Length: 287
Image 1 (spheres, one colour):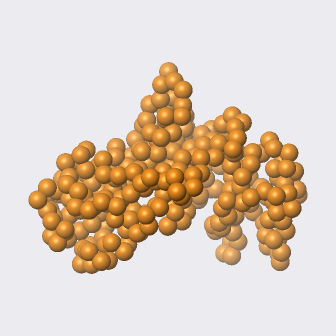
Image 2: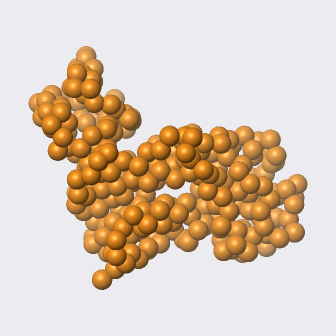
Image 3: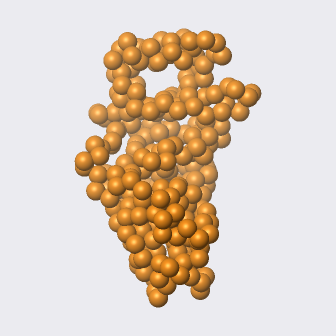
């Protein structure tokens, strides 16, 4: 039976490209399943309709995807992180054949894509209406069927799928634009190195609590790769801290740090998984 991996659809999204990258690492038959929203991807994993899901977690220029963090923290507490994919991202401006850049009145795309192309849009399409869609592919689909001088922002290959022409390539504001996707499952993946570990930390509300907690990593030489706060949704001014760091939870110094941290705060381990972070010099934008 084929392993099922869900992603944010429809076909032609960057999430699909990330899911394909992930599929290349897996042995055996893998079926990719397009789903309507990030919530639906995580729900499908939790309910067993797919084995794993691939969702975006953070972007090089726009930072973390808050909805993913909030869903993992509050709605899908039993899910685990079991992998990651770092995907170079190059956005293109796509429009129906015959529509020129100066004719575009509306630009559609996912909110992250619009934000990542802010400078291009301000410079070349200052009068165009910006419209958010559920995904870059949904934007391309809407533009293709509108019969109007609209444009979509998305991957180059989306143009062929929806019969659109490419008005401009690599319109993202930063040349090294990349998005980190995480693989979410019901169980943690096998031990592998190099590894990364992710957790959610809830601290007592007192001076020095965060400083002391981070000291458990510093004194053991454990490198933090990301730390971000999100509202706890319990009371105003209280936050959850999402922390990623190098190492596997089975490593001795990581195990010691987690034990010491648990004595100071509430810790929920999201998982340890193979790290696929790449240096910027090795990122070739996907067009």
